[in-house]
Amino acid sequence: MRLRGRKGILESIESQPDLVVLDGTAYKGRWNEFFGNDNPIYVELGMGKGQFISTQSFRNPDINFIGVDMYDELVRRASEKARRIWSERGVDSPPNLALLRANIEFIEDIFDQDELERVYLNFSDPWPKAKHARRRLTHPRFVAKYINALNARGEIHFKTDSVSLFEFSLNSFADMELLTRNIALNLHKDGLRDDLVPTEYEMKFFNRGQNIHRIEVLIGDEAIAAYRSAKRDAAAAEASRAAEAEEEDDEQDAVSSESADE
Image (cartoon, rainbow, N blue to C red; front, side, top):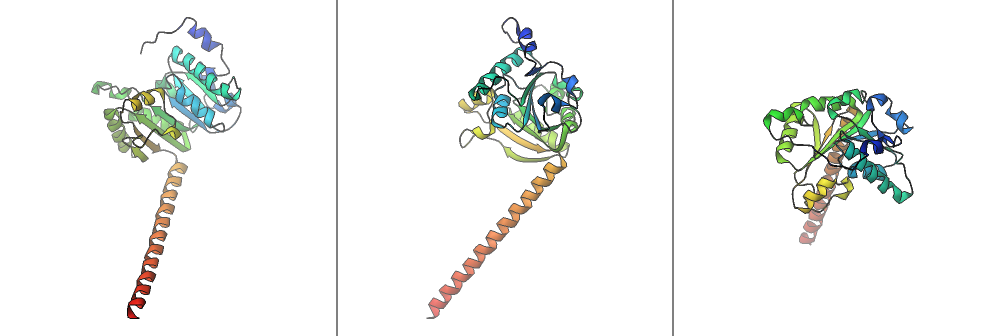
């Protein structure tokens, strides 16, 4: 990617230590110190201009968010976006957001084991040529890095407009025997799902009528246990409703039978 930005890009992001982190390795294992709390940490890998991660931080003050990108200009634009969004509350420095300049290839040097609770992959480069498959962010070699960094409640949330990348990703998750849920081949078929926070790219694709594909991958033991418990509870509730409906039908049949005898 080639970005043409204004002069002084590096100087701009260097002047924002309250929001921008240029050396993530310095915080490995202690990102809670950057935020000053022990709240869960959600990370977007490849944040682009920062619309998604900034909005997430604004909507969820009890969660810490980190947006990652390797390009100075995108980090600068994301910083402007974040400050503009938070200015609605009269806040200049978002308290639960960090914008990290880093290469995703080396995230194991930035995040320690069990340090994260969620990883977002939004509209990652599909790298369509087969010879570039290892560069795809849902390739098993990358997913293994996410798994190492995710804690017991860890999840991966993935969105893309690319059918080929989505198919590749589904197979990648299956090959790694990972549990998935909420698979959507057309996420916004009933209208824009604003509750999931759309990205800049997503809005463009949505306005063009393109399908957005989405999936959630459960990594941590607690996340998997909670999902299975919810499934059991839902099945039990459905069985109870079915039994009650059958009992009501039997009662109505009995009443009808008595009326007929009279």
